[in-house]
Length: 436
Image 1 (tube, helix red, strand yellow):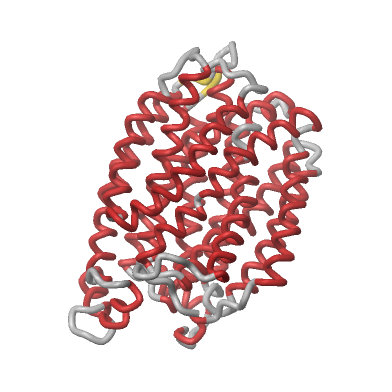
Image 2 (cartoon, rainbow, N blue to C red):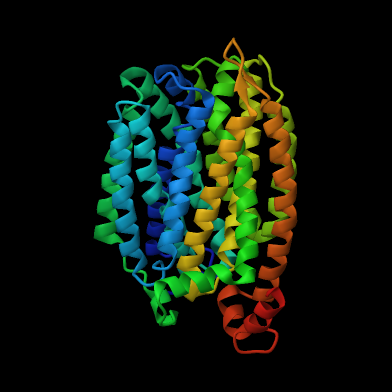
């Protein structure tokens, strides 16, 4: 399939279908993961667990996803990406079903582990498909549309999940996800074409050798390190955000969906805009602006006390926008680092690093905070300071990554620059040596 180029501002009908499909797949996975945060206050109360125990529910998903990504990396480039997508999406549906029938805390931990084993690999497969079929010049736009899955989950998914949880119990959001997943599975089987371009460039090697070779390249290791710090910030605070808003800021559980609806609706507009700005102004420039805004908002957000709803809506929406301004350009940049023959393995390892880093961050966050007699979280401001430190380190690492990608593409359309650099002095092979 031909890649879209910067000169072609419209996508083909099939490319539009892929963008919509991947966005909806991401929505189900993101909804399943993100719904845990607003359900936090409810689960802590109903299951009679501590914030640290709830943090473990979040972390076990991340840790199992990280392990699955490493195990899948060696095989990621050996099969049609459509078949890989179907296999792991089926396992994700099974795990989500187990969450929907979990009778207690222990079973819920087990269910989240199963969900993470399969759902955690979904993102890497989707990103590999995007990187295979869309050039770097339009990848920011594509990432912007795909990231709308976050916005939709905020504006519709999470509020609906909270509503049904309040009406029918906390299991109901997971059962709703299963219904959506079955429709998406049918769409993959019926209309998605095989994605096999990477198989033509794949070297004949065993899975473990492929994994070791991909994980051992220094240029890839630097990208993995960047991803680790990128994921740290969100996972430090996100699992405890609903508990903080309810007990510290004074937002009632039934009003809480409004906070997510407003932020999500704004994300439906800002996501595509951020993607376009990333392609037009430069991905690192947009990432840097997002980091500056995120730093400011962390200082404001983590120091909130009892606050009027309208102020909370503004602060939360700006914080969400800042997060999107970092995620969209960073994902586009990271996707440009690997060669096509390594892309599946790279994305799987990168997703594992993201999940493992996030899982560690969630555990650290649970250690740093506590609850007082009134149920309020204490030391939440400390999480903000640690998050800002991770932002600063990630900004420096992303600069280095951007320099590499810029040299790799040579300021040319990505699909042409890679072909030229592979055959001319100073191209990819020489650049690999400079990074190694």
